[in-house]
Image (cartoon, rainbow, N blue to C red; front, side, top):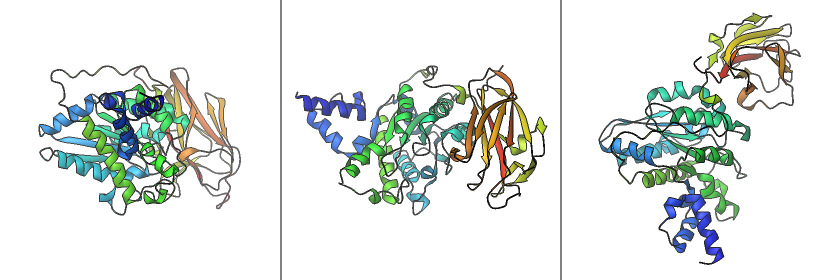
Length: 394
């Protein structure tokens, strides 16, 4: 085998997984690299949990298919709901297993990443006991969200019914996204993974196809893009589910030690209505511009404080884009974080503290400047929710 052929085979192995190429000739490996759907199969992972779901469906038992992600998983900007990638995957599954009643739980939420996903996955998805879960956050996260993304996956994998998890990686028009960070987490748990980036980007970068053949704007697929994404996912499902699930007790091992942290595996979420201040110097319960209840500060307000137990905390803010005022957080009466006009608050959620001693803590927040922008002295800035992390039974 020539060096070039060897490198081609190694590249294909990285894309498809060693098991998928065990019996392929060099020519077959090269053909796989030339096939966009084959390129999308980033990793075969351990298909046992998927095969178990297939076996359940073949027996005619009811099955729940779950998805969680951002606007792409919500179906944006498909021309109709039945043209989204989620709808096409569900249609494929139902056609494959007509004897099984399959319901969908779509926990997609536009404009959110895995940081919020880790806090809402129990309520929005896992209480429905899904058998298979697709996770799509590669264009909604930042590289610093590794612990949150891992915590989200660990929550799903740790459920008593042990759902099969399939990470899905989309991309920006630049070819960017957080596939690198997220795929390392997925590989740590030996998950099957699908990459629309790897499927399309080589041909887009080479000018063989145009970005707008598959996408409406810089990130959202059109109908063709949704259909293609659905084919990438179903190709992996088909490849993973061809064998019968093993009989006997489920060999569900404990999760491996975390790659980043398991703090976001153990979380709580407290909306405004559940927040009772331990201290309040002039903050008022109101509703923000979207009608969501928040604790809001005027120019005369001082600090508002809340107690919680855990090793860290995140805060969800109701902060208008034109508000240039600074905000300071305190942890246990020690200044922790100051956000100024240049700060980027991704999705209006900020990690205020991590790695604290396990136990009771207090978070406080205060405005350092009067609210600015349209409305001037009016109440426009607020605290919408707090999310304790590292929350475990004592």
